[in-house]
Amino acid sequence: MENYRLADSAAWRSSVPMKLYRFRYSPYARKVQMLLDLVPLRYELIEASYGDRNELAALTGGYIYVPVLVDDAGAPIVESRAICEKILARPEAKHLVPAPLEGPIWAYADFVDGPLEDILFRIASPAVRDAWATPFERALYVLIKERKFGAGCVEAWERDRAGLIAKARHLLAPTLSTLEQRPFLFGDAPTLADAALYGNSMMLEEGERELLSQVSPTLAAHARRMEAAR
Ligand SMILES: N[C@@H](CCC(=O)N[C@@H](CS)C(=O)NCC(=O)O)C(=O)O
Figure 1 (cartoon, rainbow, N blue to C red):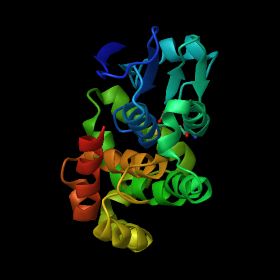
Figure 2: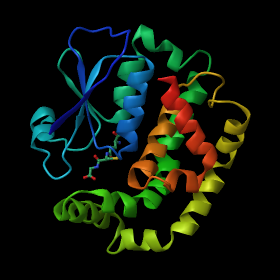
Figure 3: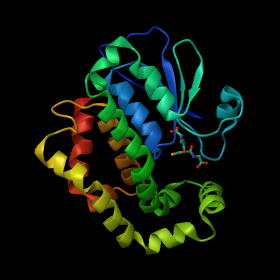
Figure 4: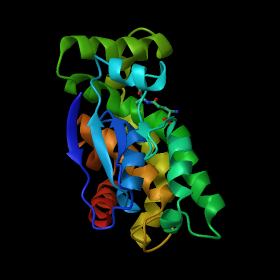
């Protein structure tokens, strides 16, 4: 695995940096990464190899999904919701789920990770497949999707891209309306909800540069604001 980047921040708080394992297209990993940047916390970003997950398996005792966060005590944490809970329990992260909006903010983040991701990953999948560097990684990616969604699913999503984008726009309509009136979902500053939405935006953009703005220029503008905010 490649040691990809050491996050830079004036407010690093721990002496032993955490480690975040990700695939660049993973919406769950990109959500966690954005949250770490927004706190901000010191971490080392590790671009996991899609085709060789030995390091992840050894670290976690067999869990080979991303994200995995190794915390500053050296313990691996899996599942992005659990990782976010752990980050947000720190006093310096309070501004990312401000009271009394804890309920709506978490509910929105769960909506993004559930129903929204369920449409957006189908739009992104053909491009994500094509972006893998090796034939083995492309084949593995398709195999994993086909085992869950049936033979030919990635090709079918590619053919139906226009229909899937129409569905995504429908589901996103209230979100886009909010983002046309204010910079972030809950006001002038980003929260966990924005980090979750950003993660899904990155899934589209990492597959194919123009895909996010094809789905929605408003969503692309939100992603740029998030990057400027961290
Ligand atoms: N519920 C998990 C989902 C993690 C997940 O599905 N990760 C995907 C990337 S988005 C993965 O690692 N897939 C491995 C694969 O495709 O083999 C979370 O929130 O962390």
